[in-house]
Length: 268
Image (cartoon, rainbow, N blue to C red):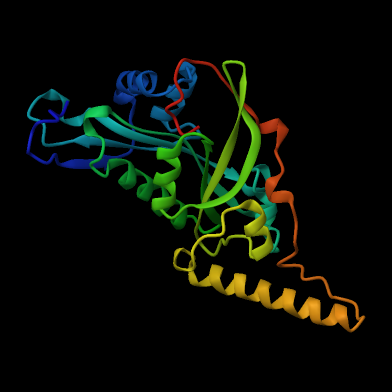
C-alpha cells in the first residue's frame, strides 16, 4: 500500500472489477463498511451479474500488488419506476421505460484517500449512465449524520432530492437518509421553488444548471400569476409540470434499511 509519508504521487488507473479481485474486494468492504455483505454479492460484482463496477489500482507500485484494488464503486441499473424517485420523472411520457444507475458501494482504502480517487470513480459511473440513452440519473442514499459523504456528493454536483425519515435502523435506533441524484440525458430537478424551500435545500443560484434555474423562474412566475388571478376571482389552471407537492418528503417504508455493526462509515 501507499506510504503516506511518500512524496511520490501514485499512478492510478481505473478498470472493470474482475474475478481475480474477489478476495481483496471482500477484505476492503469488511474494513470500510458496517454491513456484512453476503458472498453472493461479491460473486455478482466480480462476475458482472446484474452489477456494474469499476476498480482503482496503483500501477506505480513495484511489487506484485500493482494490479490490486485500492478503490472501487459498485452500481446497479434499475427501472426508474421501481425507485423512490419515480415521481420525479412523470413529466416524461416515456417515464415507464426510463432507468437509473444506483450506487451500491463506494470506497477507497485509508492510505489512498484524499487523492481524488473516489471522485474519479464517481465520474466513471456518471459517464456510463450518460452513455445509456434511457438512463436519466445516478442516485444513492446517505445516512443523515454522514457529513463527509454529504459534502462529497454536493461537491460532485449531486442534487439533494429528498429526505427519507427513519430510513435506516442501526443498533436499535432509527436514522434518516438523504437521497442524492445526478441527472443525465435530460433528467432534471423538481422545478417548484416552494417545494425546494419546503425541503430546506434551496441552493444558491450559481449551483443550479441553466435548465434548473429556468424551471425555478417559471415556477416563481406562475405563482405570481396565480396570486393575481385569485384576486380577480378567477380559476387557476393546474400547472402539471410544476405542481406543488409534499411527496418529496414521503418515506418509502418498503425500502427502509436495517443495518447492524459497530461503525457506519459507508454512504449507505
